Length: 270
Image (cartoon, rainbow, N blue to C red; front, side, top):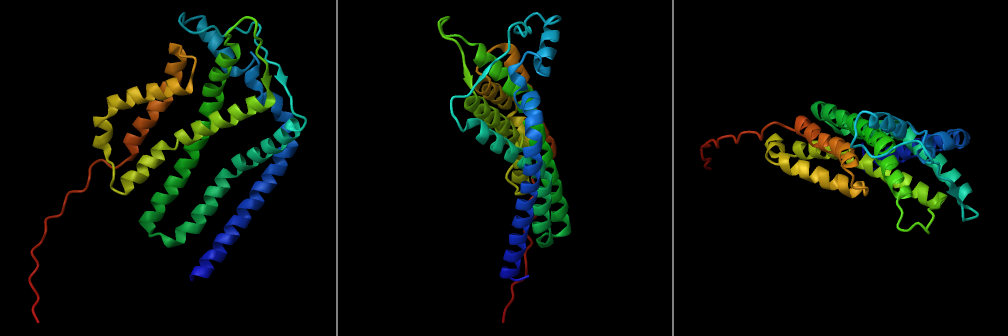
């Protein structure tokens, strides 16, 4: 294919992707009123599944923070006339993008696969599938663990008894999207390490050598993500972060290839 043929094919790839995002965004526009309270705003209520599980676990593990269901019901405040409408639109669009990710990866694979050799195609196909899977897992960890723990700590933190916490819809949605997206991207680290290994830049001995550093790094990153600082929250967030290191160590190449001995080639004379 010529350059212009490739450009035309890429144009149609973009068009099909945009159409898919629009279609799923329309579906999201229909579903958002049905799922907004029960899914997106679920963390503001003590009935959220993470809180209930931690409250139950607190009956058997004495050092857990208090996740009792008493008096935890956060009221949302809207101070901007257009916020609710814009939140409706952006949430519908986010729903459309999230649901379209598998199709987007398929379109990218469809575009690049003709330029790859068979062995390269298998590796790239696996990378696309693994990357999409890890992004979803990261978003789920962000939704069920990271965001509710941070939200509950910040909303219950009091600098003074005279100050009452009132959370705006803008603030809630901004932190909701940011933390979940960050966790989705963090879970792409194994894919990044796999790509570096494919280019011959990193191998399994690297992960064995710096395993202790990875434990400390995971703990520091968890402390940065979870401002509460209690041991339980640090432990819960550190475990999946460190697990990414071990997953990366498993999927990268074991050893660098041995250097081939230089062969003495006969000189060629005219």
